[in-house]
Image 1 (cartoon, rainbow, N blue to C red):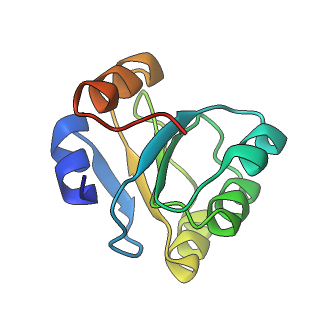
Image 2 (cartoon, rainbow, N blue to C red):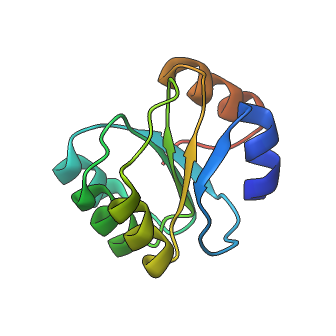
Image 3 (cartoon, one colour):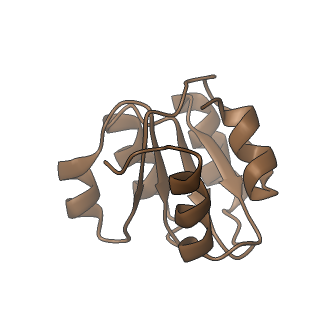
Length: 111
């Protein structure tokens, strides 16, 4: 799935535009060490965390995007770092549960 399709599916707002990587799998977790161990190239990661380490983990795992549920946003300096690292950051009004369900319905496999 393309990020542009995911944006429409999740009624998401683009907070930072990164590389145009295709989404290969999805994952929802807020424990960074677990995400680091399971992160994959092309992953769409759902998290409520908004600090700089989120971008570092997403970049390390070559993830396609970070999705913030429930309208959560990141601070501008962190979004600047996401752009620099090529990580797309989205904010959706939907819950993390709903986001994962929608991605699953569209055939995005879990990580």
